[in-house]
Image 1 (spheres, one colour):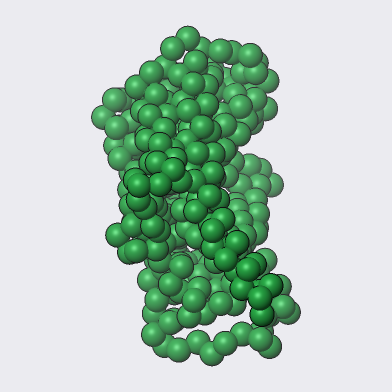
Image 2: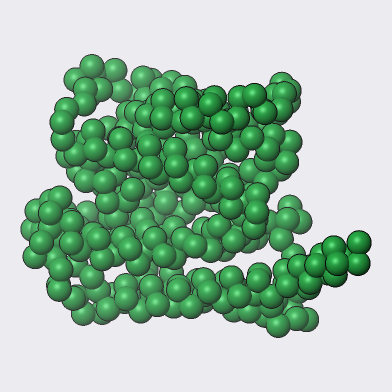
Length: 323
């Protein structure tokens, strides 16, 4: 997603139009699947629940994706993946405020979770403030773009623009984290995850169209050709929004929003090497060290959560055996 979106924007595609096409593609992809699998078993949809889903779509998808796209234009694919690693910390604190996630320093799992969050912050700080020597092992490939163009673009960006992009990326992640947490409450009232995801994509496509048509009315900017723009729309709409959002809803229902958010450091590692191969971006030593620290924090939190759930699972097994 980071790579194709950045490539499409660098080829002149409007961010707001891209979000509209992406959500429309996801809706078209999900609609027949949702009707086939869940239409007969779907619970009724009260107006209050519909309003919650509308707000969820506006906050977590429409605003998050549009702000993310602007920030990605100002920065790079690697930085976008790096700043996404603030998502676990944001989601963790939001879950604590809404009492979805428990936390105590009197237990080893609680200490492990705190260490993991601190490690994520340390890894993100390493990525932001320490560059180190550049490693150009894969950058000679640059399959989706010209390496020199990307390097010149990175040098020509003013520092104020880069800082603005970082701030917008953090704001986008805040909306995303809020979306993950609030989905916990909506799924309890409307457990049909496929229909929920489809409805969110449909509402988001309408919201995104209103924003896009208000900002860009040149018909030429809305045209898609057989190029990286169409590839980015199709992939981000079908695979990222359609397939991944459904999987995220399933994981949130089973393990909670923090468990899902803690997997985001893996995106940085994948994006880091892929951006070097496909876009010709250079990998710095700081990126490698930051990615390693983030991975340590990820598995520390996952270990703490698994240890917290072990007593509950053992108790459930004992009750089942006694009954």
